[in-house]
Every structure is written in C-alpha cells, then in structure tokens.
Image (cartoon, rainbow, N blue to C red; front, top):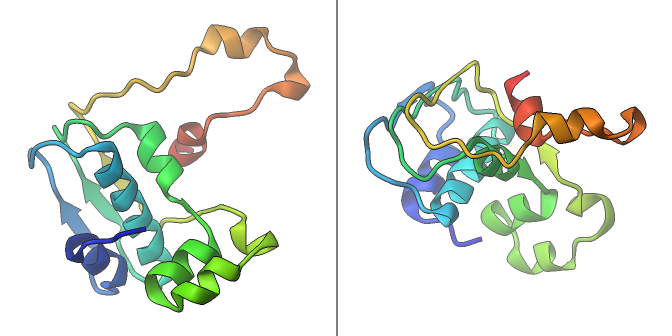
Length: 139
C-alpha cells in the first residue's frame, strides 16, 4: 500500500477526533481505499477519530469504504513496521478485521450504489444469507 502523507497523518494522529471533508471534490476508488484504511489504522493506533463528515464527496461508496476498513496485520506492518516482515506474514496475519472508532459518519449526497438487492437476499436460503459489510458497518 502506497500511503501518501495525508492518509498517513490521519492514520497516525491519536488526537484527531473530528474530520470534515464535505464538498471537497471526488475520491477515486484507490483514494477511498486509502481513506478507509486510514480510518482503520487510526483505530488500531489508539486514535480517537469518532466523527467523520463526508457530505457531497463524489465517488465514495459505503461498500468500498467499509471494505477498506477491514485490515490485516500484514497491511499494518507494511505501513508502520518492517515491509520485509509484512511480505513473509501468513495465516492469521492475513485475516481481515473490521476496525474503526466512528460514532458518527455523515455521508449525505454521496453516490451509494451498493450492489445489494434485498429481493435476491430474501430468496436465498436462510443458512446462506450473509449481510454485506456495509450493513455490518451501519449496525
């Protein structure tokens, strides 16, 4: 992962509690991934980012950002530790864990095409139903 300084600052800042990027333009899919990882890394670094305002930011979907908040120990090691050690990690260190400290995530006027169809979900057998990650994020 190639974090630039902005995302790294969010990930490492343990005093940042509020972040407002409303109406700041568009986030590409890769920038949305970096943003989600920065939020997760902030939580893992004992940060206190709890209030996130993203009203009107184009290109950011709940699916994409919530998936990006699922991080592995290898990803964390790659960004904040030894890159060679990160490449050698396997097994449990590659298991993704959903992490964030968010209490408020305001995302009005963002494009939300989740690819989730409730009718398809309802028709599937109960033992095969799996909630999408964005549902887990919202709950």
